[in-house]
Length: 167
Figure 1 (cartoon, rainbow, N blue to C red):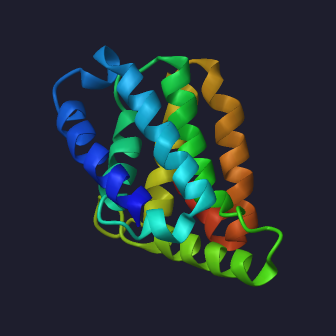
Figure 2 (figure 1 turned 180 degrees about the vertical axis):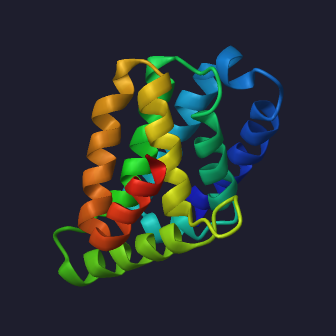
């Protein structure tokens, strides 16, 4: 709970800053640090972070960032790693029961409605990542491929459909 409280408090200020025009390009350090932090949180404690009050706002912020002029390599890498950590949900790989619960929770998170009507978060994320592959520096290619592979492992049928919709 303390981690979620801290991320929530940081998230409020971060989202306020990033809602300003050109904030992603003018403040890439904030993007990098915040998404590295919550990306690690998702990696280690997926259910806690993805069920926190700030989870949807963080996800929407990460997706929106792919459509900005952000070209900072470290920021892009932290954002795409955050997406991959959601899709992987493998922190508890040593405990099959926990791993199954984490993956089920991550899958449910991805199946929730996205920003556009009739769109899931999974579709929204795939569209954002694939947009980044064709509009951002080449640093986006490898983490996007890794995330697509993680999605394929997590939700094979949905991942194919989502990636197809993203194209």
